[in-house]
Image 1 (cartoon, rainbow, N blue to C red):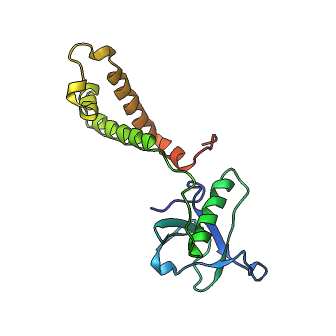
Image 2 (cartoon, helix red, strand yellow):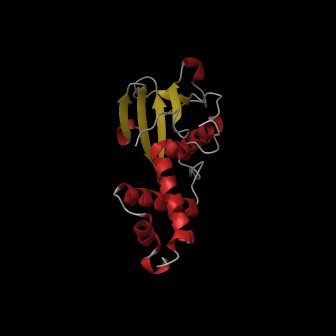
Image 3 (cartoon, helix red, strand yellow):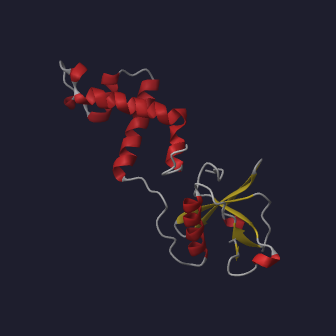
Length: 182
């Protein structure tokens, strides 16, 4: 999947290194043919698989075979995440372990997002909150009589609302951890 750098902070903007940049600050990119490269209206996007990690890069100009590249990191709100992604890319290109991704969701958060998407899918298909709760939590946990005031009903409603928020653009917050302006 390809993302623009302004959407996903882990995309490293790169440029062909000029004569003044040809130092340890520039690096030849690995063979782009080994990765996925796409041209878009805003430039060239690449996903490079190095070892066990995917690294995303973006360039305004087309890839130049054999050229050295330098990271082009603007001092904006995503600088920390981009610098971290650039360091991971540099480490991988030099045969070192890239280290963990900048932002990884906890197991609990991944499970909650998965449940929210499942709840949204069932809700979109016309399922009632009770039917959705039975699918998510098991029929045995759903009471016959006290359903209207049961905690699982409230939890199911919150999961559907969370899924709707993700569908309406909230998923972008997952791509930009720690940013309050998005």
